[in-house]
Image 1 (cartoon, rainbow, N blue to C red):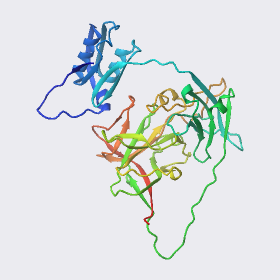
Image 2 (tube, rainbow, N blue to C red):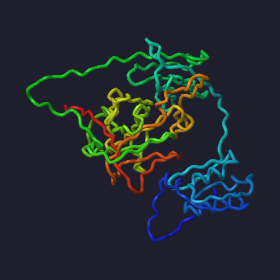
Image 3 (tube, one colour):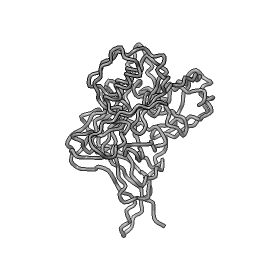
Length: 400
């Protein structure tokens, strides 16, 4: 393994580890004219001021490189550089760019397609989900309840779960759904359980606590664009509460389309970067608020019994758009989505769903808001950061 290291020493001291999102989103300008691939990589690395490692025989079949990039992200430059070579891959680990040969494995795939609908009325259930049980890979149905879900041969032994908020889950074997060219999955409405109320003359101890940003002032809103954008708020567990996440709330702006669906995300904290880490919500959960929503919109998560991590957690909102499946399918967590089934006389979705939610924020200076970039990396605004209005209600376990 040959390793080339380029470092600019501005001062004597310890070199910090560069986070993966910072490395790939560095903007560089570089000009390459009929340069051997190895020399091109060296020049790009020197321009970006990063470490890079690769095998010396990786570029043996590469042609000389001619490329010009002006103030572009390193990610875009590398993608353009390696576009003609499908067998070269790269990753970033601990601030170092690592190049390696991509292994090509032919895996047979199977596609399940059909409709998710209401068991009694037969009406389609918009944005219901079908996913591999216990795994983050799944499909979000379109506005008409239609979906297509592609599974690899290795996933045929897994079970699939169909679900939607307000409906009972159903679990299937993949062989059951593959037996038909098009399936119809019917979900039964879940009865609403109302908690009992005890009336007493004495004051009851508080059984829940709300964390996050519940500021009464709103200074602006941010639009969730059509590329699966996510915005997350870090919710600190300062008092080390022993409990579970009962519900999460989003302050939605009526300047956006409050009917637009969005995905609820709950992440733990990545201990290396302090950014959102692993998704701890065990199910793909897509919500479509009613038309009259204005302000706080609550999502009940009590059935999932998500324990509050001692070092806090992130609550995020992710846009889901009926005509934007190609971007959403490329989510870094392998989340697939329903595919558009066009008809000659059907526009597929109501005209009202043309753009997404706007979520409110309450002023600048908030250090807990994170954004998910088009390059599938979490980052924070360097300037004019604000505190997005998201909160979580914690159900506190009673002490014995």
